[in-house]
Image (tube, rainbow, N blue to C red; front, side):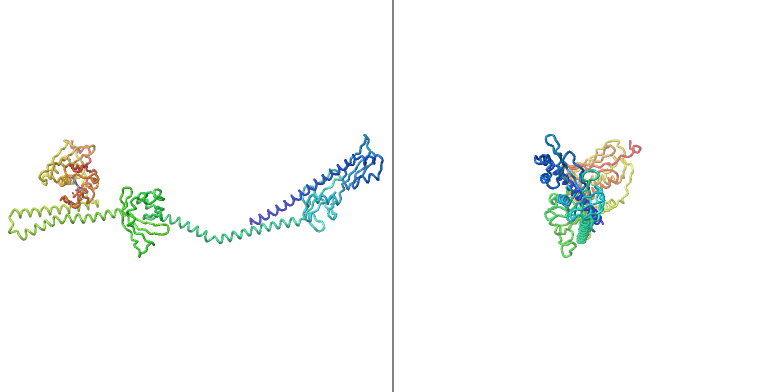
Length: 582
Ligand code: ADP
């Protein structure tokens, strides 16, 4: 449609271009006509100034004048010129000699075939084109002198028929006055129309060809375009899927540069994709170098034949140890790794292993002692004196108590973990708590150890569970005794510290390295897990202390210089003023 409309517009343009050319030719012919008139004028002047012409005029020698004038030139003798012939335009020049008019030179430019032929030559008419002179309704066309009746208006192209031929015609006025003629230029209408039509068809055909070509190209490219659109949709979908995958996914290219880092990878590691992508693995993941050799890499995803089972490896990321279950698949773009965070599972597993090791170790020693003592009593009791028998029975009692305590600790830990332990919240006297704890501890104290209390008087009551607070304090005192193998002084302090009462147990024992002071409160954590110092323990005591203090809205910590002893401190909140001891 568009091409056809364009073709229509184009053929119209062709026609108006042809008309414009017609106009141009007419102007050229008119200009040439003016030039011819100018020549006629000059010729007249030349003759008028010629002495021979003047002499002939003066002598009225008509024959000689005819000879001197030549074609289209006539002479008038005397003063008057006479009227001009209507079939020609004339240029008349007065012949004056010695102040006297001798006559006139009249140069004629006739509207005849010759003039038309000359003007046609000048105006470079197209094939079949012609010029003509019009006067009134009479039109005389050059190149054969066809006469016809036609009124051609000025300045407007019309169509007219002559000799069965259609023309486009345009007229211009030559001269002025009632007898002035029009110069008419004619161009065959068929040629212009044919040209316009041919142009119209050419444009239409070209347009159609372009259309067909576009359709063909479109048809040929359609699958590729569709594939491209599909694959870009698929890519976008894959990126969306990747960002919603729970597993961390990253791609390391063959140069060792990280090219992809999905949302889960960001969440697990805390490293933003922007900080990681485009950087070398060595720089972005410092711990990767040690871990990479341990990570299984398959050549096809899900390949059972290959070792594609994920491996659990530790990865150090900015000082944080993460345990990742990770596996990779290599392909042309590099290796894509998928991982999941198993740090908690790993911790749990480590704890379980530790628990089994610690508990079995802790059980074995007292059980072995009890078993030995029981067997001795059973088989040799007649031969044993009373003191030895007493000693063995004491040992059984002590070891079974230790076992019971161990079991108690394990149970309590379970309750604390499950949140099922009920903790009272009532006011009690902190100083009384310290005194009770010390009194009880005196029964367990070994030689060379002293227990001192420094307590501020008139302390406000604290709020919490008195029994559990006593358990915490006793545990700290026991640890102070346990980890002061050479004995020494143990100081118990109780004082107000802001809105809290601060309890402290200071010993002169082994102390705790700075880096371990947080971790000793972790479950099963022991500085000397293999009991190389001969001091046994489950590693649960401080964990229980911390959990109990936290459940009473207090806090607990240790201050220590290794070798110079340790001070364990815990604080419990002061009861409301109404309940305070004051
Ligand atoms: P354990 O049953 O091993 O005593 P705890 O949880 O009570 O378990 O203590 C954890 C670890 O903290 C101990 O194994 C010990 O290494 C260290 N520890 C606890 N109290 C002291 C202390 N007063 N002085 C030095 N080390 C201590």
